[in-house]
Image 1 (tube, helix red, strand yellow):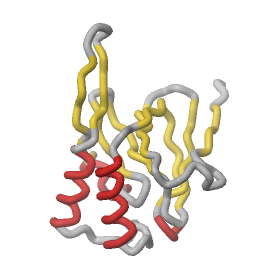
Image 2 (cartoon, one colour):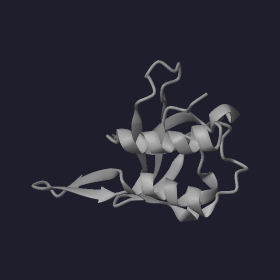
Image 3 (cartoon, one colour):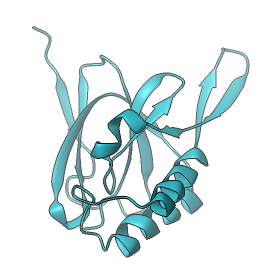
Image 4 (cartoon, helix red, strand yellow):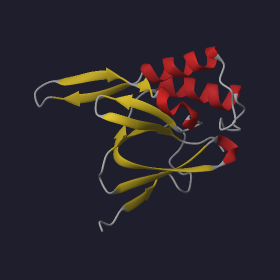
Length: 142
């Protein structure tokens, strides 16, 4: 049996509030742990490889949606309005995931993973990349 390595993301909350990353799901034997869901303090785990993202305006849009509109209480039991889902999709699709063919880098917009919409919560948003499913993560507001 192969040992898994467990890596908590910002376990003591000292990384600040400006980080945004993606874990692309893959058999890497590295499992990232993330507290998410606002004040509901849910714990998520995802195995894969970590990709840091730049996207201050998109992070601000995500924070506004989850912290202001949903009041930082998480989205586990939230019924998304069409307008909220559009705003979430717009913030996600404005982020770029870069791939390379070895000579040229290529940007790709992220897409919401509608097949896993029920998992969507503050600081835990399932998305799709050219390399497969992933989870978009950032610092939880609690």
